[in-house]
Length: 111
Image (tube, rainbow, N blue to C red):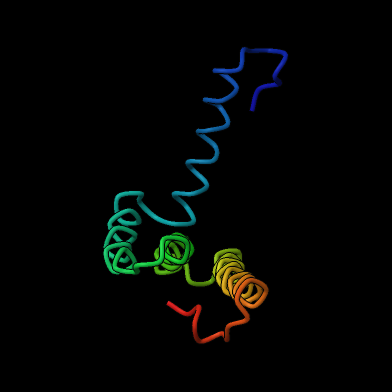
């Protein structure tokens, strides 16, 4: 990669982009295959009526689609766990908010 003093921001961006693109193709396969997998999985996730949960699930299925190509890529497994924890945090926040404002049980905030 070029030193940023040797070129403008656009050239530096293009150089970096080429490296990242090659690395991702090596890890995850052809982009068209990955996007096809993501699209198929998102079609199911999009049925979730909860907008926030739907977005978390969308990030999880993106990582799952990548794991299909490279199942030994630990970083994607860690990302799945991280997004799952985000889902649990969201539900926890909802339970706490419901308890503090209405004194309701966990069952009333599900779904």
